Image (cartoon, rainbow, N blue to C red; front, top):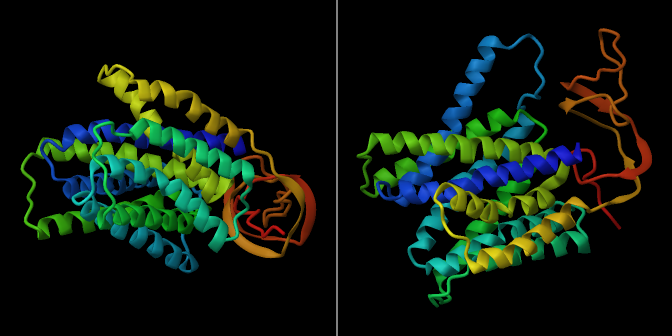
Amino acid sequence: MRTKAQLYALLAAALFGVSAPFAKLLLRNLQPLQLSGLLYLGSGVGLLLYRVSRGLVAGPGHRQAALRKADVGWLIGAVICGGLLAPAVLMYSLSRTPAAVASLLLNFEAVSTTFIAAVFFSEQTGKRLWLAIAVITIASLILTVDKTGAWGLSFGSLGVLAACFLWGIDNNLTSHISGKDPVMIVIVKGLGAGSFALVLSFGIGSSLTSYSTVFLALLLGCLSYGVSLLLFILALRDLGSSRASALFGTAPFLGAVVSFVAFRYVPSTQFLISVPVMLLGAFLLVRESHSHLHLHTNVAHEHPHTHDEHHDHAHDDGIEHLSEEHSHAHKHEKLQHEHEHAPDIHHRHEHH
């Protein structure tokens, strides 16, 4: 499960990284805030169409846990922080910040996510994890550094850091509902954030003129924001906020690779230097091992699962074990054992 989650995080990063070079082309006909809104809206609309089509052909068995009343607060917080506030703060700050500074500061989302996860949500971190995050961040800094010398500290720079911090909050809040239906989470976040950004752009006097560009932006948003976020949420389930976000930090590197292939760019010296550094950071994360004696307390919840050492419960129909993933409300009895684990939805315990 952990290897699959790591692949989900890397695929999410690859899809999101692809958005950068293609979004740059779309900006020829769209304002930044317009594009941001269309990308988010495309993610929500695309996943909504997928959900509707699945509902027409799906059987009676539902393998995802539905969002409940207790999840609404986490979801609203994630939408406000990551979908409404962060993009608005970023767009405002970008107009007052040199491009080189903004590109470098945006790499600190993973650092913000890990800091918030460790300090406010007691997620397990360690020297190896912080080292991996530092290495990946350094590789991203190398990749995005601007040699023209356009530097300067300003309130705009602080705004970019604030946007990263808001996305860090978003990642941690989303992690707490990652066991629930990821498609519905993406739909709510996409439609909410996309509608807000578009209304805001219209409010400042912009208008949409090229409908073919609008369609392409929606399509890009469906893949690079919708499917990417879907995979990221699946990674959050088994990796926790900090590790999933650290792997997601490879997005600039993977986006550069796509640019070289799709647009036939010649790899720069910066890229060639960043390759081994980025690979080292990813290797440190993938090879991380964490094991100790830990206690599972009594808890009742619902999420997709198969029957393993953490899910040894009976069903009303008398079936004791199911190899196929399914979802229903179930109870965990008190259990103490030792095995290798990540801060997934069953192992978000404090460490001493």
